[in-house]
Image (tube, rainbow, N blue to C red; front, side, top):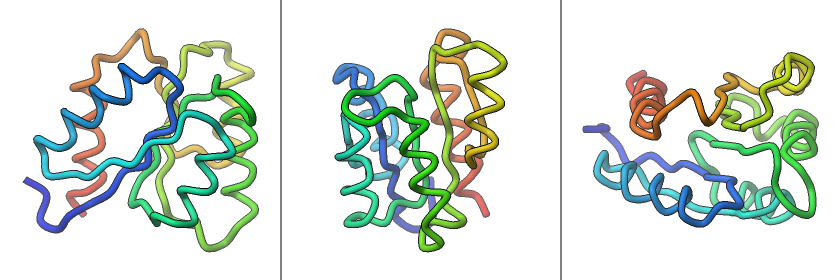
Length: 126
């Protein structure tokens, strides 16, 4: 169990995937807030101050690359880990996301949600 209440911003346009994250993370004592597009993600980021961000790249309005660049340009978001979880598996996409400040890049189809939850818990052990 996580010692103090942690909060994860889930930026994912697939409602079912967001709900699964919410359920799995709640079982670990981790709160989630959700955005289904890039514009809402930046609004929630400023309001909610999450401890970690799960970011899909292929989201409506403003994509995940835009969100990463916005985060990188604002010093108040420094230190918030951003786990990019996307089905974009091209090396160029991965390099671009990492250059924009992603902490990790995971390809959705290669990882079960429980693996991602376990990875999030690792970030919160410190």
